[in-house]
Each structure stands twice: as C-alpha cells, then as structure tokens.
Length: 296
Image (cartoon, rainbow, N blue to C red; front, side, top):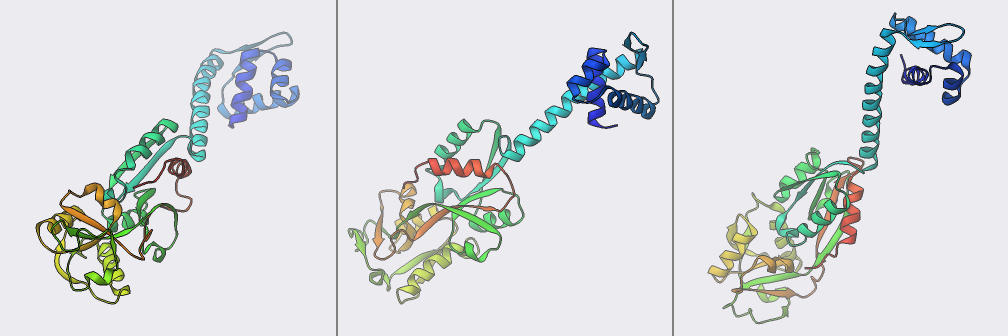
C-alpha cells in the first residue's frame, strides 16, 4: 500500500465518482479502478460497492476512510515539520559559550534570534575552553562562541569571526605602571605574573606565555588562578600582573587597570565555531550574529 493509493482512495471516497476522482488525480479512470482493486486485494477488504450507476463506501470502507484521513493529516504534518527542520525554519540549536568572552553581547544575540526564529528552540550552556572543544568534537553542541586561538589545529571545524580585541597588561591601581595608557610588554619582563592554571585552561596559559615569549622573555608565574575573575582578584589583592583582552574590563573593578600592549591591537579574536553540515539552523544563528553589532 502506497501513499498515492491511499490518496486515490480518499479522493474517490470524497467524490464517489470515478470520472471526477480521475480528473482530480490527473490519471485515467481505468488506472484509478486498477489501483482501488489492487488496494482491496492487498487489504483483503471490500471498500466500495460498485454498479453501473453508483459508487458507495462499504461499512468497512467508511471506517478505513476516516482512519486514513487522520493518518494522512499526521503524515503531511510530519513531512512539513521535517522539511522545516531541514531548511532550518524550525527545530533546536544547542549553543555553547565561554561566558567571559561574550557575556555582555550574548543576551542581545539570543533575544534577536528568538524574535526572528521563534520556532527554533535555542538551548544555551556555558563551558570552559577545553569543555567547548570536546563538546564540538562529540556533537553535544551545534555551535560554540569562543576565542579562536589554536582552533586551526582541530580538524573539520568551520568558523566565523565575531570581533577582535586588544591585549592589555592588567595591574592593580597602585602598581607603578597603572597610569600608563599603553606600553611595550618589555616593561613587564621582570614582573611576577598571575597565570591561569594550565590544568583548568591550557589555552589561556599558552596565550599569555606565547605573547611574552614573542617579546623576548618567559613570564614568572607567581600564582595560578582557576577563573579569569579570580585572576583579576589576585591582581587587585597583590602587586602581580597578567595579560587579558580589553573586554575583560566588563568584569573588573575600579581597582584594576588595563594598559594596552603595543603591537597587540586586535590580537584576541572571538568566533562562532561549528562542525560542517551538522544542523541547518546554524545558518539562521550566523545571520543573527552578522546583524548584531559586536563591540566591547
């Protein structure tokens, strides 16, 4: 039994006229007759009384007709729903994010997306950098909003840059360098650094270390922090320094100063990252990102 056979039977049941039903179905009357006979043989049920004048549904035919109407409604609904998901019009999208990299922009992005695409369920989850990478690799998130340093080493990822940011030396307000607007990083080569614990975030450790090595010295790691907010608190409590992107001023108190590092303007980049051909709704999310101004 095929969908076309069912539709042919329902059309004939609604018209009770082979000529009219054949015209609606764009087929010949002999072909329609053959389809109905084959359907009855397959089911082992007489669906229609036929004579030279009339076509009527049998009691079994009336029952079958009502059940098939409901089934076809469900069938067409299912097909349309699947098409919408395939086109990205409806469905769900799992978004992972690194909060400190995009926290001040995320509400605007989410609100705009839900306004434009109310039939796509947007599910948000915050992660560490390593957790985000793992989530992308095992498909537990569809798309991630995250710093994109070192992502080129991971295969099968696509990305679209959201914004760029300047790198800054971060010091307490009483530090001798606190009043400077910008500096060469060599001015901090003898300072003690607060670094992210590499067991928590190897990416953040590497970012700071690589910048320092590029400037000719290895940072002296006096303390290790578990979070970036904790790192800034350690700087505020002591006389150590660190390196952070300028947007981290959104999370800093007035007791911490951010000093732009010469030569590292627009060095820190945040991107949308996703695996190719995973979820059609990703394109809708990227369109909203494109329309949302990225500023720090």
